[in-house]
Length: 258
Image (cartoon, rainbow, N blue to C red):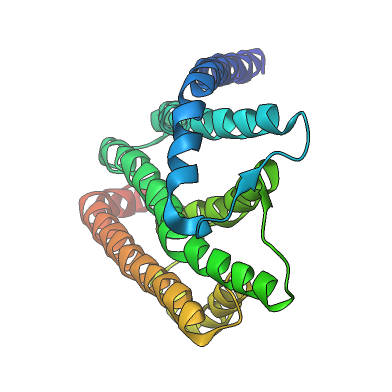
C-alpha cells in the first residue's frame, strides 16, 4: 500500500514538473508575443479583409487589450506543441513501444491541423462574414467604423474555433486508440454528424448559400477523414490482437489445462 502510495506521489510530482515546464514556455512566449504583436497587428490591419473600413480606438485601454489578446494567442500557439509533448512523455511509460512511436506523430499533426484551421477561418470564413456585415451596415445608411478591440475580438472569436474544429481527426484517432470509438460507430452516426457540422457551418457564416457550402463542405470532409483514420487505427489494433493471440493464446490455454 505504501509503495502504491509512493508511486502515485511520484506520478503527481512528475505531472507537476511537466505543467511547470509548459507554463514556463507559455510565459516566455507570452512576453515575446508583446514584441511580435505590433508588427502582426499592423499586417492584419493592412489586409483587404476590412474593405478599407477605418479601424479606430474607442477606449484608452483598447491598445493594451489588443496587445494582450495577440500575446496570449502567440503564447498559446508556441506552448501547444510543448504541452502535447509533455503529455506524451507523461503517458508514454504506460504504452507499448510501437504505441509510443505511433502516438508521437500526433503532436506535429495536431499543431499542423490547428494552424490550418486558423488559416482557413481567417482567409475563407472571416472575409465572407466581414463583407456581409459591411453590406448590412451600408443598407441602414450607417458609416462603418470598427473599434480596434471589437474588430480583433470578433476576429479571434471567428478564427480560433476553426483551429479547434480542425482537431477532429486527431481526437477521433486518439479515442479509437482508447477503444472508445471505432469506424463502424462513426459511420453509423454519419447522418447525425453531418447535420451537426452543417448547423455549425451555417451558424458561423452569413445567411448566404455559397458561404454556407464553402464552410460546411470542409467540415464534412474532415469527418470523412476522421473515419478513414479511425479505420486505419482500428485495423492495426485488430492485427495486433491477432498477433498477440497467436503468440500467447496457446500458452495461456496450456497453463489453464495444467
